[in-house]
Each structure stands twice: as C-alpha cells, then as structure tokens.
Length: 92
Image (cartoon, rainbow, N blue to C red; front, side):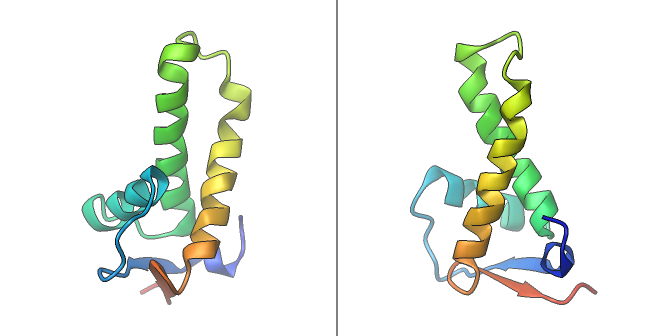
C-alpha cells in the first residue's frame, strides 16, 4: 500500500477497546512500540501473526511465500478501522 495514506502518522483512539488479536497488535504497535505509518504497523502486525501461525505448523519457514498476505490483510483492517480505532494525521 504505497500511497499518500501510507506515509501519514497513525494515532490510536484511546477510547476504542480492541476487539480481536489483530486489533490488539495494532494498538501495541502504535501505542507501545511507537510505530507510526501504515507500512510500519502493517509490517509489525503481519510479521507477528505470520510467526504465530507458522511456529508450530511449519518451523522450517516453508510458508514464507504467503507472508505478504498477512501484511495486506492488516493494511485492509487499518483502512476499516480508520476514524474508529485509528486516525491518520499529517507527518511531522
């Protein structure tokens, strides 16, 4: 997702409570890890979910070809959460 939105800073809405593991990881990325762009957050969360899913099923890393699907799914989730759980603000 390489567009103007992907370069804007993400801010977590502290009034929103995460409703899934994915949303909690997004909150962690923004609030605790201080990751700010869509690309940074999607990469962090996608990697965490990929590692979780492949840890037991494929410890040799044979599923690396699908790693980008995780990031793409998180990019889509971030877009759905915009204005609800996350806001975008201009980069400093």
